[in-house]
Image 1 (cartoon, rainbow, N blue to C red):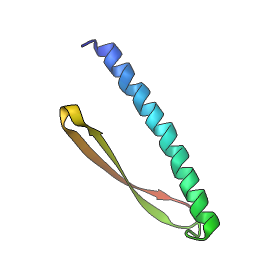
Image 2: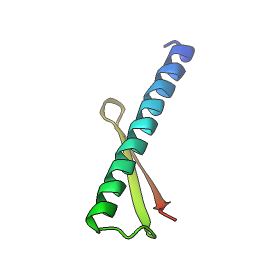
Image 3: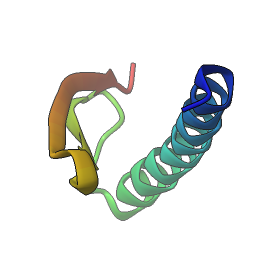
Image 4: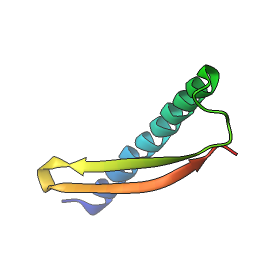
Length: 68
């Protein structure tokens, strides 16, 4: 294993996940606001699960997104 290549590969993946996740969250919240499902002052619980089957990794990350 080449550590530098491994670390760069991880960083590239995490950047893609971060950018895409933010886009998906923004679209979902905008849709929920326009439909009246959300009012705009909520704190929304969120969970992200990272899985990596070949090495039996499954870890969850819990948090909260505030709309105010």
